[in-house]
Length: 41
Image 1 (cartoon, one colour):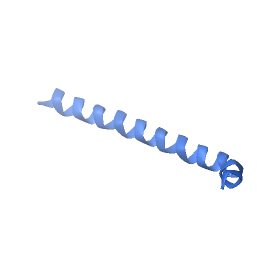
Image 2 (cartoon, helix red, strand yellow):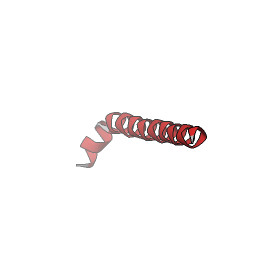
Image 3 (cartoon, one colour):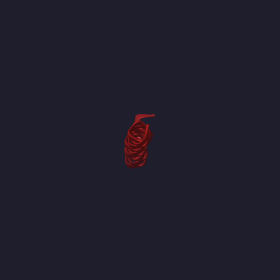
């Protein structure tokens, strides 16, 4: 069990980093859209 996780560590790490990147990107765009709506109103 431990050996397989250690062998596939780069795959899990890349998936984890891409998920963090997507979440940060989505939060940034959501805040920008909310600010845009507030400024328009």
